[in-house]
Length: 264
Image 1 (cartoon, helix red, strand yellow):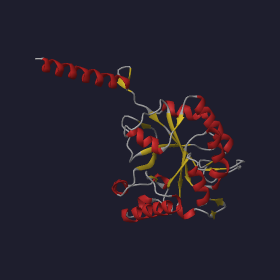
Image 2 (cartoon, helix red, strand yellow):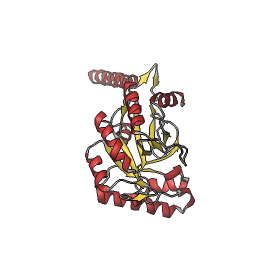
Image 3 (tube, rainbow, N blue to C red):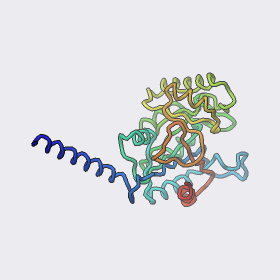
Image 4 (spheres, one colour):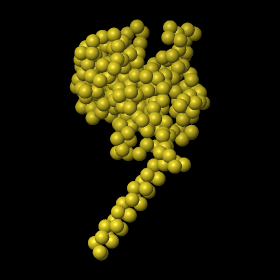
């Protein structure tokens, strides 16, 4: 009888514990579905030109970027890394109340010259997706990062370096095998230059993908794939289908916050 009573007490304690854990994850009786915005920037210039062939979608100013960071920090956002995003998605850590990620595509030298000092100033994390064939080069007047600069940023603990491919092509127009080989080769180069990666994230150039390329990369060691525009949510986060918001030239922090708030 005593043994049966103890079992009943144990079961009751376990149920109460489970309820408390559940309630700790809820808000107004529902599990909190946290928005996870990811911002996308590209190149940076000190002076905005009068005209731009890409309609000012892929350039920005460091002054505007710093305003964005200042505004988001003052509105309670916590800048997290992809590793932290992965850990939170897998239940190893908790999401902050208002997480946000910032990313830079292509690997422009301006990310090191203008943006890295801002990251250090505010002690915030960011990720740069590099095109390995362009590292250390100047192409069409655009200067790209060197491996030494990538290593310095990575060693600071603030910047993660990931793959944006080897050749920067429209990968929805090529055989899956070729796409896989390209991405694997890009990571081989990255790891030779910067050390092994515990987490491998791939951002598709132009957001161009197919279901077959996504599946192939997933099966071959790519942990996260980025290739669409929009919002991510904690309750149904899909690490093979990560979305971002492109930040065009001189978009303000207020405008970014409006986009975050109105996106369902």
